[in-house]
Image 1 (cartoon, helix red, strand yellow):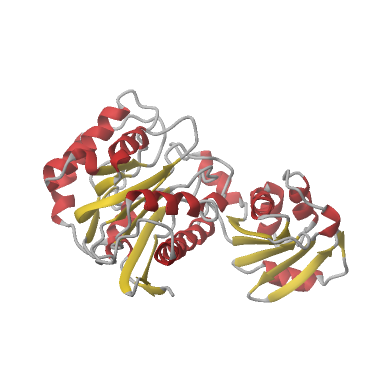
Image 2 (image 1 turned 120 degrees about the vertical axis):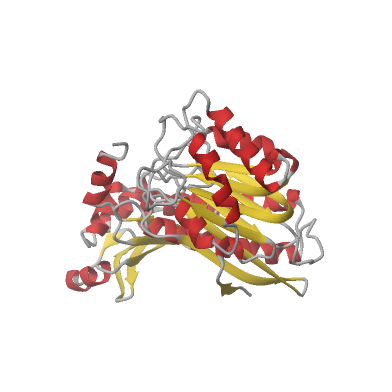
Amino acid sequence: MLKQINGGVCAAKGFSANGIHCGIRKNRTKRDLALIFSEIPATAAAVYTQNLVKGAPLTVTKNNISNGVAQAVICNSGNANTCNANGIEIAEQMCELVSGKMGIDKSDVIVASTGVIGQPLEIEPIANGMDELVAGLGNNNDFACEAIMTTDTRQKDIAFEFEVGGVSCKIGGIAKGSGMIHPNMATMLVFVTTDCAISADMLQKALSNDILTSFNMVSVDGDTSTNDMVSVMANGMANNAIIDSEGADFDAFCEALHGVTSYLCKMIAGDGEGATKLLECKVSGAVDDVNARIIAKSVICSSLFKAAMFGADANWGRVLCAIGYSGADVDVNAVDVSFVSAKGGITVCVNGAGIPFSEEKAKDILLQKEIQIVIKVGDGVGKAIAWGCDLTYDYVKINGDYRT
């Protein structure tokens, strides 16, 4: 049973955070450097973008936590450390700065970077801001949230309390992500902290399994970022019996992790660049979960369907079209489609064919900010959920001059 609590990445015992403006961003009112710190070394796990063009911080982080241990996260925004000749050097210097200020091994640092790709990134603003960043460490989840944002319009964070073997544990996370989101492993930048005791191997297993039904099921615009990374630190300060194998305790942890990740998925999709609506596609009746995921993702990735949702147009034919080219094993003559929102629900397609429905009622349903596309594709056991957003004029405006 999950109980929602406050605190984000600072909710779990032993974790503190901060975010400052160090000068990477020209806008002096926006924070651009974040730090998350654990009082003691934590087990660590991460997943990374499958884009062949990878930001240097991902390479450094992967090497750093190859032993399954981390104690801090440092992340800058405003300028992605990607496609820079000295990118590895800058990422390693960021780890060294944390090491020097916090008295930890530089290899125990997770480093991340987000913003414009290909612009030179200097270490001086980061180095000059370290004293302020470290001095402000505390219950400052909101500052850290702000410091990792790029085109995000709102902070994304959540925390839960849960039980493992009768011991109360906490888990929380923050995320950034608004555009260039179409993950092939994880997505955007997401940092999760927990005081649950779990081995590095089981933590990695939990995360790798979780992203199949969480971050891999989000798409804003079909572009896979060069900087995507999800990391988890678990410091064990809740003092539960360490989870080192599958069983009830592992299942409880996985449920809590998915509570965090699925919540952040919705926040990311709903805050897509220029978006006015959160789209949630729920598929059931597929031959298996894999095919259900293929169908759900294809629908929320369709530019034509996303545009129809922006216009509150119940164009269910675009749903069928997306299912048809998805590559899923599906009988297109057994597809039912309904649209659901706070204004109710309406069925628009049965057995792959249109049925009479009220366009006025459909419009009213689709004018809401959160819309479910409910799809039944047969009598199989496969099911899945995917999250996306509508495609608006503002998406083009934002990305027409993103660099300048």
